[in-house]
Image (cartoon, rainbow, N blue to C red; front, side, top):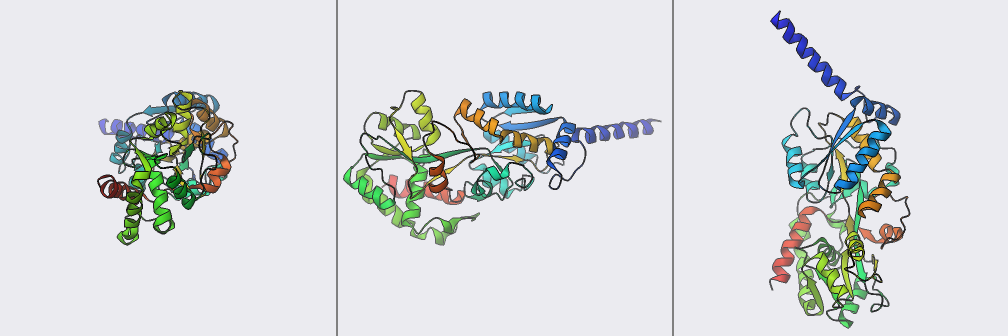
Length: 378
C-alpha cells in the first residue's frame, strides 16, 4: 500500500511538472499562435535583469494584462545573475527562463552553450532588427540565439559654436587635432567605453582594418603584431589630445569649455543634457570612419521550464509599443530599425551607415591592457 501511494505521488508530481511546462510542441516549427497558446498554458515566465527596474515592473504588468501570463521579474546583481545561470546549466530544468545578456558575458555564455535557439526564425518581428544585431554582439558571433533588446552607440560630441565643419575621416580628424591642440578629448579606455571606441577606431585606421578579427574566439597574436604602430601614433600625439578619466568627465570638460570635441555615448549625453550637466546646443554624429556601438540582448535558457512564455516575453519587449515606452522611460534607444524617434542625438541614417560593431572581446581586453602599458604608462 505504501509503495502504491509513493508511485501515485510520483505520478502526480510528474503530471504537475508537465502541466506547468505546458503542451509539448516544437517551438522552431510551430506557428506563432501555437507558441502563444503554449505560453498561456505554461502560465508564467521568470526573467532576470540588473537594470531598468521601473520599466520592467510596468512591462510585466502590461504583459500579464495582454496575455494573462505572470512575468516574474528578478532584478539582481549582474555577476550573480550569470553565476546562477552558469551554475544551473547542467540541471535538467533551471530556475531562469530568460535573461538580459550584455558586455563580457556574451562570450562566456556563448562558449558554454547556455541558450536555446536559434530564436531569430521563431520571433515574428525578427526582420525589424538589423542583420548585424542578430549576428554579432560585443564582437562575438551569436547566430540568432540572442534577440536585440536596445542599442547604444558612441559618436563624436561637439560644440557647434567652436566646430564648424566636423571631421568625417581619420585624416580629417588628425588634421583637426593638429589645428586645435588639446581641444579634442577621449576617455581612458580602461575607465570607459567611449575611450575604448576611439582606440578601436584608431586600430582600424592604423593597423589594417577591423574585418580580420571577426569571429575569432581567442586572440590571434599575428593579428595584433602591428598594433605598435597604433601606440606610436598615440604617443606622438599625446601632447595634442586630452585623455579624460571617465565617460562623464569628457562631457563635463566639454561643458566647461576645455574641450570642443570628444567621443561619447549617445544615452550618456542625453542624460547629461537632461540633468543640466551639458549645454543644450551640443550636437553629435557618427563619422564616416565609424565608431563602435552595440546594445544588450535577450536569451532563452536552454533548460528553461517555460520556453514558450520566454519567447512571447521577448517578442513583447521587442514590440514597437514597448521599445517606445522603454525609450520614453529610461532613454534606451530602440533596437528596432523601423521606428522614427524624435529628439534623438544620432539619426537612424547615421547608425545604419556609420556605426560599426566591436571586434571580439579578447581583442578588446588586449587593447585596453596594451593601451595602458604602452601609452598611459609612458
